[in-house]
Image (cartoon, rainbow, N blue to C red; front, top):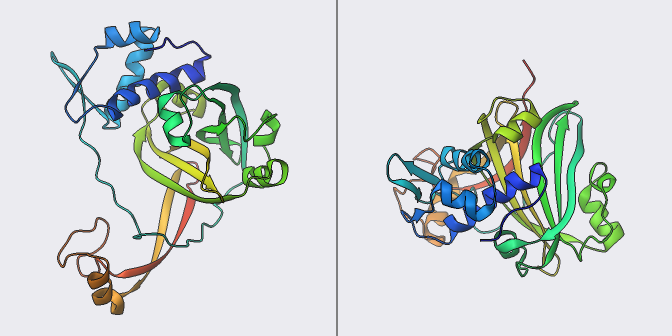
Length: 283
């Protein structure tokens, strides 16, 4: 495993990614190297390594058993809000949004990011870490990756103002078409907590998104950490109960099956939906 050499923001992210590479390539319950061995392999201090492991343990990705070591945890249950593809309006979240770049550099993609962008691990990618603020208060840290060939000459001011997808279209001729985004609960690392002004291992939401252009080429991979005390996602469903029988018979859903978040009598019905981000007011 290659030793990590980079700035502090990127180093913590790389440690996390290297451990996740091991997790994603191993079966459930598989033992992971000890913290001592991992710190030697990655060339980082034990406290840095332990902080990354603590984050992944709190997020339910890794299991730590006293006297036995660390193991790959079971996969989380995945729930799609709407089957197949659907068009959804995503309204703008409340508040005045701005951002500040913490780091911008060109690096090798590595196995994990390379898989997401369909690139060789040695392929160059442009990595951006930026702090997102709402009404001048930190609310999130975003880690963005672009194939370096897609955004040549990208500088900090390009991603601190304006719409990123407008920039891709107008300067680079890249038109985004669709994206797959996941969201789950996590905690902030000590460094992320310090940057956002919250306690270490505070509740947070992690978003991961892969964006494709009109030619189905991955042009962006984003890993974002949002403060759990200031941000929530609201979904509004327009339920069509009359279509429930047709839905159950055409999409393979079984009567009585459980669909998390949906009342039993409505599970399996067709739903039009709208998703919005909602920033909570500061205390």
